[in-house]
Image 1: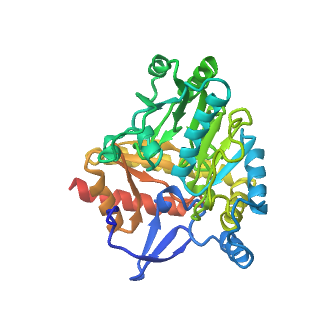
Image 2 (image 1 turned 30 degrees about the vertical axis):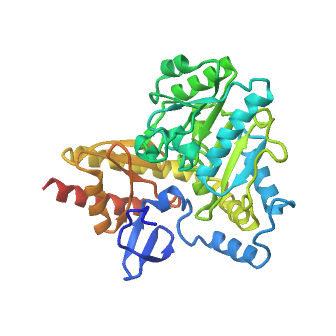
Image 3 (image 1 turned 180 degrees about the vertical axis):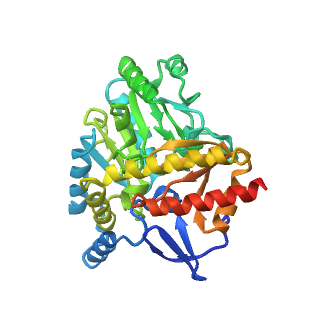
Length: 385
C-alpha cells in the first residue's frame, strides 16, 4: 500500500554511523531509522547475539516461560521505577497497553467510571485507533471516525489547563517528556514535576510515552529521570531493540494491579529473538560511561546547532531538544532542508512545526558531529542564496 512517501534510495548495508546505498554511496545517518538504531548499524555485539539466538530458538509463545524475557524484565526493573514489565512489538502496542492498564487500574480499585486520559495537544502515541485518538491530531484521525472516546486535550506545558481538565471520569495523565513527532518540543522539568503532583492529588496514574525519549536517547536511561520523578506506567520501544522490533510497558506493582492472566496479551511479544537483542542493547547502554558519552555528544551537537542558527537566520529559526534528540526549526520549509541534506549525504527525519529532526545513533563521535555540521552549514548557504 502506498502509505509512505519514500525517498528513491535503497540501502543494502549499514556500518556504524553510516548507511550504504545500492549505488555504493555512503550516507551519514542522523535519522537512525527514526530514533531506533541506538547503537548504529551492524553493531558487532548485536549481530553476534542475534546469530547465536537464531541458531537456538526464535519463537515459542507466551504459553511458556521465556528465559531472555525474564532476564530482560529483571534488568529493566532494576534500572527503572518499575516493578513489572509487559513485552510487545512496537511503540504503538506499548502505548495501547499503557492506556488499557490505566483504565484497568481504575476499574480494579473501585472507580470503573474513570476511563478518560488528559493528553497534551501536539502529542503522538502511535497509529492504532486508540493511540491516534490519544494524539488527537486531525491529520491522523481523518477518515478513521468515529474517534475512540476517552481523551481530553489541553495545551502542552500548561499545568493550569491540566488541573482544570481533571474531572470525575479522569483516570490518568499521558505525556511525552519531549514531543517527538510534534516537533522536538521538550517539556519543562517543572511541568513534569507538576503533573506528578496533580496525579497524586487526584488519584490518577501518571503515564509517560518514552518510546522515542527512552533507552538512553537524552543521556539518561529514561528522560523523566531529569525531572527527578517517576511515572506509574510507561511505554517504550524504538531504541530498546536497536533495530529489532520490541516494545515494553513498564509499571509499578500498584498500577498494574488489574493486569492479571488473560487481561492483556501478545503472540510475538517478548519472543526469544527480540529479548536476546534487547538484552544485548542493554549490555552496551548500561555499561559504565556510555550515558555520560551520550550527554557529552549531545552537548557538542547542541552547541554546534546554536552556531548554525546564528549563522543562518534566513534558514533556521531555533534549535530544540535534549541529549541526542534534537531538532532545527526552519524558516524555509523543513522538507527543503531535509532534501538538500539528503543530496549532500546526511539522513535526517522530518517532524511537526516545520522541524528537521536529528536523532543519530548514540555511538556518535565528535568527527561525525563535525561532518554533519559541515553538511548542514553548506545546505543552509545554498538555501539562503
